[in-house]
Image 1 (cartoon, rainbow, N blue to C red):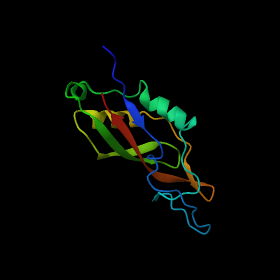
Image 2: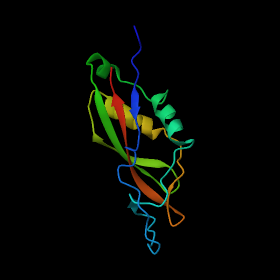
Image 3: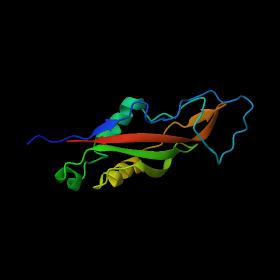
Amino acid sequence: MTKKLLTLTIGLLMFSVLTLKAQDNETINPDSVYTKVDVLPEFPGGMKALGKYVDGKNHYYPEEARKNKIEGKVMIQFIINADGTPSDFKVTKGIGYGCDEAAVEAFKKMPKWKPAQINGQPVRFLATMGYLYGL
């Protein structure tokens, strides 16, 4: 029997809002979460490394979902903090059968990112990523 693989949808879904140049005179608030930044956050090794990370041993397709032939996309929103740590994970679109929880658990294991920047300063950034489950 062939093993069914989990497929990751990254593209630029990760950053659901277009990056726009921040105003030069903008005051950076360390408690604010930004969606418009000068420099996007970066996973260590880039997008290719991110794809390998989430499509590998850090994620699984739950048995209940497999048995019930559940397919679909789980969207996760999270914050990449100014120190690069990902946090505050929230399922914004789920498919159930353990897939939502499995996606969040994979995200919680992520290493630190290179943080987003405005005017050369690291800032907190709101990101969205999706996992595509299928048989």
